[in-house]
Length: 269
Image 1 (spheres, rainbow, N blue to C red):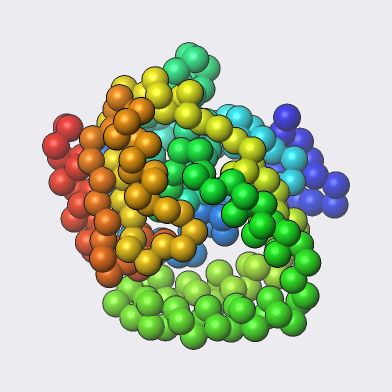
Image 2: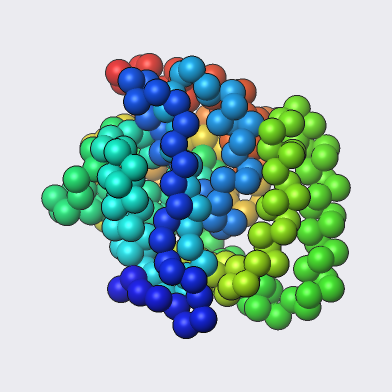
C-alpha cells in the first residue's frame, strides 16, 4: 500500500495542467524517469489542440502499480480533471493499465476515454531485461553514471535538435538523476515492470487502444507488443512506428507524434 518511504519526502503525484478544459484532454504518464522533462516539445506542439496534463511521480520504493493508479486518479480529480485519454510512455503504460483495471472494477471516478501506448507495452516481453537493468542501476558506480549522463546530454543535442523545448529541459533531466532517492526509485520501477502483468486487463479492454513507437528502440520490442495487442486486446485499433524516432517517441518526434494522435482521436470522436 502507499505510504511514506523511510527518509523520503511526502509521497504525492505532482500535476501540471495546460490549456482550456473545453479541449479534449491528454493525460501524460511519464516513463522510468518519472517526470515531464522529456515531453516539453510535444506539449508545445499540441497547444490549441488538447488540454495537456503532465505529472511527476514521487521517488517511492513502496508503491505498487495499484497505488500509482489510485494516487494518480486522486491527483487528477483534485486538479479538476475528470476525463481524458491516457498516454502511457514506456513505464507509464503500467500505471495506465492499472488505472484501466481500476475502472473496469468500478473503483475509479475518472472517465478514461482511451489509451495511447507511446513506447509502452502490456506485460513487458522481456521481463529479464528489466531485472538486468535494475542490477546495472544498483551496481554502477557514480563516476560511470556521470559519464553515461554526459554522453546522453551530448546525444540529446543531436536527437532533440528539432525539439528545442525538450532540449532545454535535458539539464533538468540529468540533474534529477542525482536527486536523493532517485536511483532507488528507478530500481523499484524496474521491479514493478518485471513483476506486473496487466494482460488480463488488456484482454478485457474495449476502450480504443493505439500503439506509437520509434524505430530505434532497444528497450521495448515494438513488434512483439503490436503482435500481442492484435491477437488479444479487443480495443486495439492501430499501431504506427515513426522511423525518425527512438524509444522516447514523443520527445524525439513531437510533431509527427501529434499528427498521428490527432488522427487517431479524431477517428473515434
